Length: 486
Image (cartoon, rainbow, N blue to C red):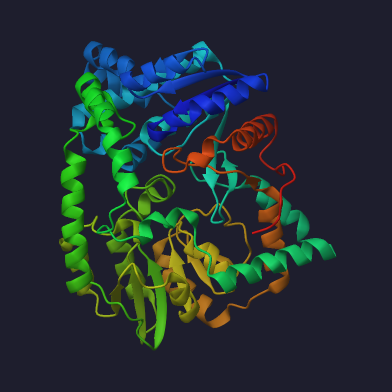
């Protein structure tokens, strides 16, 4: 089997080891990189049969092609109507001027056409967190190439593989639908109950939120040292590739992150003192947590809901009279947004803006209805048996008791329906939990610098086997047998 690994950003630290593992399992592994320095890094590892550099391709393509030619190339794709959504979902490309955007996107399309025709992989493994990867997914679909996106679940060390930008979890949905027609076994029932009780007792949060819970004023010496160690690579990338690096911030001036962190600290202090409330008001409440931006789960999976202030306005107009809308900032966005962003919320008389330090579990439990675009608030609301309305696609949106909003004009009726008529169903909830446990792979996934455990040999073997298992299977299969302990 031939596998193409998309070595974007920090994946360059873990993918060589994963490639070695896949090779030991009989796979042929090829790498795609976004920058020239990353290409050299991947080549030095000797883990890949070939390494293909996007930045080099873009430099040549942009120089040789005129604007109108690029427009015609993009118009000729079967996914042309999606291309602008891809651009606006990309934290880098959407900041470029018009002509550069068109030429870069045409160059990206040309790169994928050429790469996939040359390599002909059976499976691609990577994120779909930027326009380049999204285009790669679309081209792969036209060639019937499987695109696997490792997706950490809200439970630590549990991962599933999405097969589309929407993040659908086909295996869990298939397992859940099967279970609806029969009873859980006594063992399955016990495991699901234990999981649910542990979640509620411990108020378990998504492991990805741990770093965001710390204040920006907290000085983590080891983290600072890791970031400093990356500065030479950033400088090298900036000098060699400049704006042709479209996979991370390595194509931006290296001094920008330093200035950004300084401003973030000042904003965080000001926001906590003058903007956010820290106590949960009483009375009738609807809860909406702000999402991280830029972020794959919002910008790619729900590209038409990225104006969260406008969305909050629509929610505020839609709740019944006498209700407050509680809006909590995301822990990972401390100091990230400008003061002018929060000022917009003052125009809404029934909206309260809460500090990211307020306990999200308490907000979910104390609210009559919870709303989210694609965040883990939906997962937590399900496990607390509280009504939740999802405006974007959820990887577990197949659960019967999730209210799916297809259009914001539906919100008044949906909110009223959820408040008045929602009824928990414990039997369905336990089947939902079992479908999750039965189909999630168990391994550590993420930035190997932040979590060195990702590169442990036992974990690498689990990752390699999971990728190979998914690559050989359809979208509605169960993962390998796993431990069910929380």
